[in-house]
Image (cartoon, rainbow, N blue to C red; front, side):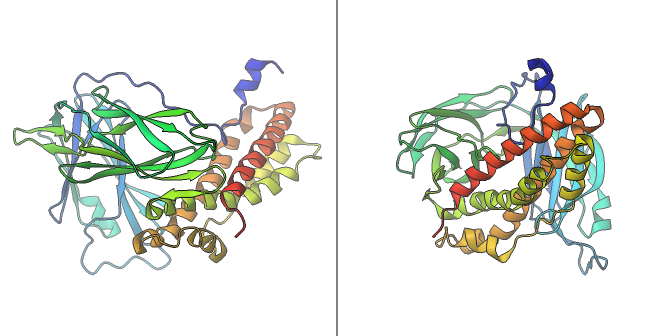
Length: 384
């Protein structure tokens, strides 16, 4: 099989994610979300759209979910530009690990065209009002750089306005150990603004020893100017708060690292099953049938966190806050579902068009990639 053909079937499961270069938008809009309890959030919708979920939402008084229904744990909003407005999908995420994504409504909003999503009442939530306002790019001064991790520093922060306001942040690894994941947070107006993390799902090295890594960090949430126009609030500071090294060592704020480590543990739990299942196909004479068997065996794998998995994380982060500790179990479930669903989605993407030879190659390459992934995760959880 030639190189071009090989690339067609290349396994997506364990590839490093890359960010496509987005084209500037001439007139972005900000999505306004007004909750029934009086909270209002505004977020600019760039060329790649907007997606966010929140565990904070007002419920219908006295609501009880039907028997056998997982409780609503989060409200999700996804938006993209459409014409002179925004197309917005609203859904609820059920279960502590967001096992079920249940669509509620899809609407189009625009400037002076608000929409009340009353359909949320059907799932026990009070209505959400969606609207759009014009967005004005702000002046962005360079925020202060800080690192709370020895061996990791911010080498530069560059404000950028296109396609949406934000900052390009360059991080230098001054150690001799690769970085798998690091956490970052910002302040605006003297208060904590945004927090996040950088890392590859497959635990591939993010920053090699002596190397730099540059990522885009958003400006603070949009705010109303009082003139019917929204703009982003500039950041005061960007700080590196924690890191997971490739050899399993942790540094920095354990409360930030706890959910990140839990995500990796969840993926490790499911990878044990995936590697066994793929390994059993080595001698299969019908590769296409073996591919179908891998899918059937993987799709129903449970993703709930086990006590052993929870303990594997909590013992590594004993000083994590109570809030962070409560997030460990759902984060393990997130990670487990992520690994499981990525393999199933990969198979669904290619299985109908594969020849037997291509199916054989896919199975062999998937096994090698997942074994390597499992080895990287094993290094993150060294024996006590």
